[in-house]
Length: 136
View 1: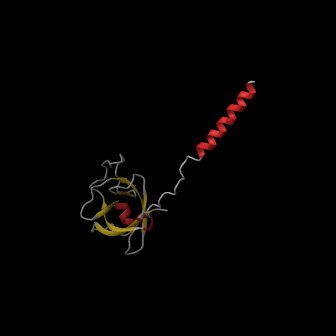
View 2: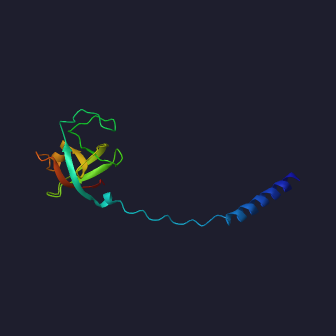
View 3: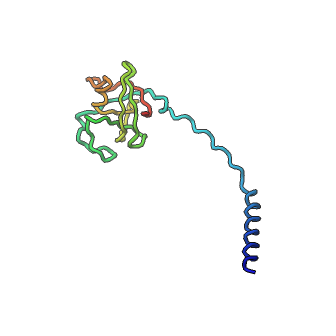
């Protein structure tokens, strides 16, 4: 008798599941996300940061070291790796975002002095045009 009852309950549950399966709305594919411009590259104004901030704490909690390959950006998450390219000579460097900066005057990226030196932009002119994208 118990076995018969269990079989009856199992059959009832199976019928209910089949019936309920028809009530589930069809899933639609999510709309494709617009392509992130940082995949291909963004051209913008950048500046290098050096001795003036060396040893200060960044907003991520790290100590800024102008000899490391780091960057500051207004919105990118900490730890984001960016390839920064000097369009004048094609040299590039990979930097890690470890700071937030309130960049003004059209500047979108601040890179360490070491990063600027690697791509040939570490001279007296502190503001320049670069192309930056997610590092591969």
